[in-house]
Image (tube, rainbow, N blue to C red; front, top):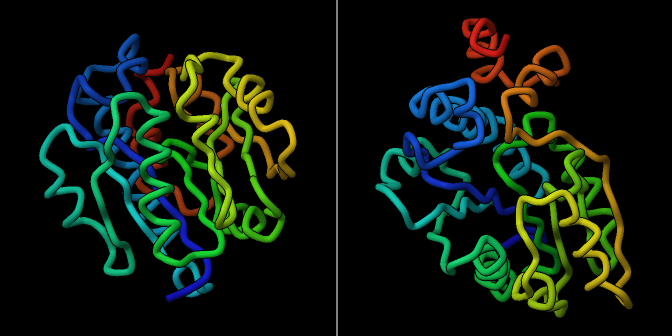
Length: 221
């Protein structure tokens, strides 16, 4: 077993259940396809982390049939179902599910950050002393990690309004006394404008999403 673990945190792609805020411009099926393509790109990109001594996990939501998603996973990924009512509870469960296995450091990210790279994840592991965060441009965060012995329940079990623009600020208030490191801010994909903005800024490795954007740019006009 390696010393570090990475968790890719996602919902099972179901039309009208995922990426619903994209549906001001896209249909439920189209929004689901965007989510699925981001996941496929993530599997390909992050599979390479296993060659750097990082164990890989997929934490998927308990809504819908996960079989197609799990069958698409590279062999280097382990997988398990999320537990909890709120997104905070589910993230807390995911980290607590993996960290006690024996890892020194664990990082969790969402699955809707196309410009997240292996290099950023590796930097997060290197910089982490106690806690590391990756701020998102909308005021939240796309990455969180901690070392063994750190309990993040104070963050996840409080009444933070997940999805609001003050999530990062509220989180940092609850991390007073901890040593918090940061990696580069990135854009996550919540709204059609996010897809439009990132179209010309995609880093290498986003083959599936780039293909969709090229074929469907008219939907985002």
